[in-house]
Image 1 (tube, rainbow, N blue to C red):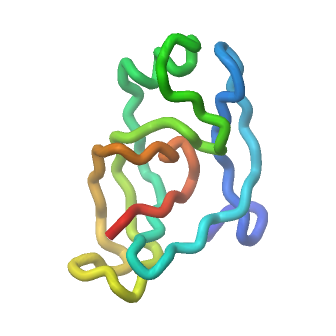
Image 2 (image 1 turned 180 degrees about the vertical axis):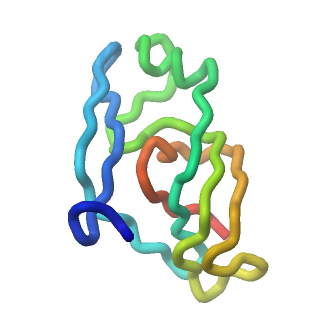
Length: 108
């Protein structure tokens, strides 16, 4: 089950300090070196709080622009990705920010 709208997902957007919007956006398609991951959980850390308060160097204008500590399930795997299969459980902590979305592409 993707979501209530076929091909769409929910994502949080932080357009300005102290403002959070829940929006619907297209589910991303993974490239040949990416894995489409369905988010199961995401941690909130100090940098996320700073972003929300507006005193952090990262400004998220893209949907789901924050979050980088996650648990997820691989739902689609790019053709060049090795070692990951659909249905695999994934844990991730890194530079990418988009995990406050329902789905996100992760470089494989």
